[in-house]
Image 1 (cartoon, one colour):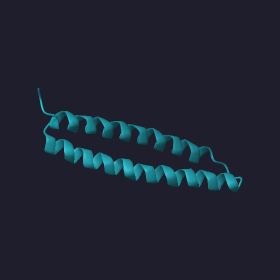
Image 2 (cartoon, helix red, strand yellow):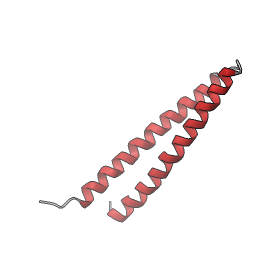
Image 3 (cartoon, rainbow, N blue to C red):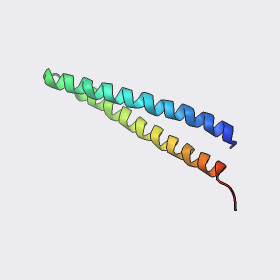
Image 4 (cartoon, rainbow, N blue to C red):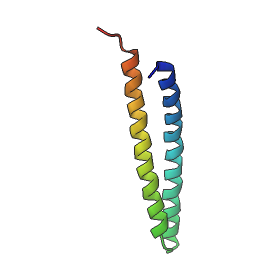
Length: 77
């Protein structure tokens, strides 16, 4: 993969991670609000878990792209 392509993908991955952090945070707040109101949280917690799993995958992908960028820019011996 070329450096320019990888950098573009990395930029997109970083945006997904940033966006995902916001979604997870909002869903956690929603679960807490439901709990305070004494309402059923099962579906909200299930959705939160799904978001957290997806976020972990996004972070993993971003980290792999970061490693690829380092590999591409490192001087070769």
